[in-house]
Length: 454
Ligand SMILES: [Zn+2]
Image 1 (cartoon, rainbow, N blue to C red):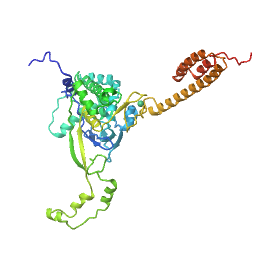
Image 2: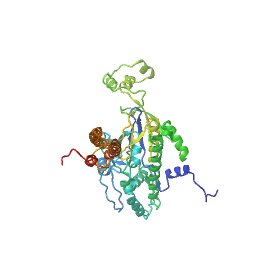
Image 3: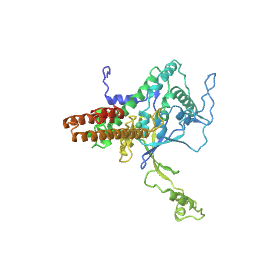
Image 4: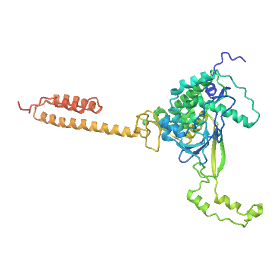
């Protein structure tokens, strides 16, 4: 089969961009994702595979700058986008902190309202750090490829560790701009001339497609006359048909029973926190075997302990790439019927809460100290003041000149002409084209002031 003039369909291109390559794979980390079905919150536990308790840098005469341990807060405070600071809650687990992290986000529990992950990724300007990673990539592509011989799992891990460290050193500043690119880094096996450009293309294309898709599916102002009667999921099937993108995704769901109480469990079997406390505290150890324990030959108290120390059902998703995470979150947005609205100030989407659609989001834009909502409220207040002032001036002079038509100082047709112009001027004043002072000067000078003494 010759493929010389083979024409790729949009669907083939879609898959090709997301496919792993021999030099770079997009699934560097394997993270666990859970959803709170009631609150529409996503929880991600970031893999700890590349955290080390004890680390010795590679020897054999190779000189390497030791990387200083980075705190996740350093990154958030240094160059985190505002979207991510506001919407994401980051927590460390209660274990001893590792001595060294290759990626500052490893081991974190990250929670956010479903939809914010996609928005954070879509609103990140990845072009900022693009030139730097291109330079690194070009530099590294001249490096001789090492012959890697591994004899056991420990050595495999060591090699992987080195590759991941390399990857994060090269791409770090680029990746740490958004949450998903930080916690789903790629894994570079080898630097060819095509490696970094392929990764940039991957990020750019995945982001572009998702932007286009969320507008089509969730934007309440996108062709509302035609689309408002559709459910988001129905709009999605139309979108997939129009743009030739996949209609189905794999969601790798795993059912599990969790021992700790968290917001991750599924609804059925969800026990009230007060009842959990009651069950835990009412446990009395016993030496007497219950009938079931006798029948099954279990030790005394084994059955009761499962009642007093409850476990909870949970659905756990394993996700390893940015695009799979975006798809998983996207499908959850469809399930939860989430809608987006564009903020009238910053022009970015925000999640509609309840039935009331606000004009402004409650985020703080870069370079601002106030949220769009606060800025918007101030603007509306200023506008009302301006409107009120223009209306008051108009009324004052209307009354004055109308009275003069009654005593024939102003002819009725002249007054009508003036009234028409005055309304126009009032509107211009309300729109801020002219100041109230200019408006008043014009009103005052419209007719000769005959009462003025000579
Ligand atoms: Zn805004």
